[in-house]
Length: 246
Image (cartoon, rainbow, N blue to C red; front, side, top):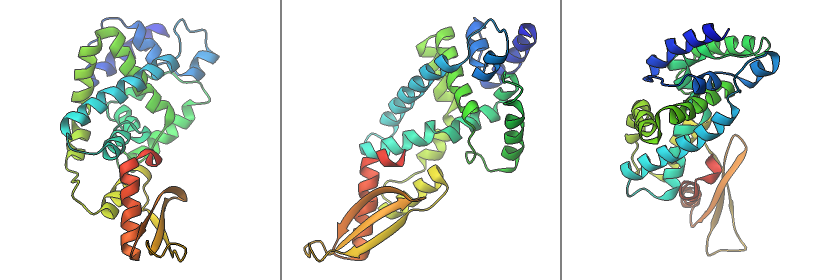
């Protein structure tokens, strides 16, 4: 099993631009918890590496966004980072580079993974999510870090995300807040935001009060002298804060 797994790892790593020095880290990265429970396997599962990889991705993407969007407010940066590191994006990277072919899973989990792969082939990129495949990529980032060092890993992650970076660099911050929020919720949730608006007789100074939701999840609110203005203010408040979108 170990020899077979080694061969599969060495087959997929070059596809994603990795020349390994120590395979032990990668054996762990490509071992799902369910496989470790069912088998007498000399390596740990990938959960600890997944924890470290998530932190590395968060910091690397944050630094990149600060450099690329120097004048963007914190709320926009938070939303953009969430789009880079969300489960759908990391799942898509795993599928794009065939990393799942070297992933060890239990007999019970394997059919679920195979079913997902079938669905993924028919779907648009970045639309479907599968937690084990997201965790696999995060663990791989950590394995690369321990194997090659922080400088090499940062450079590798930036190169790997170049396609996603280029796509997001096309976003314009001068768009109407409602338009920008609509585009972001489509990417993050696959749905458009919905607004509820009412008069505020107790506060005639403000006129109208709007709340904005996506898939019944509350995102934020705002006031305005007109219905349109209150909805625009609600959308802007969500974009500025950003936390509720994640």
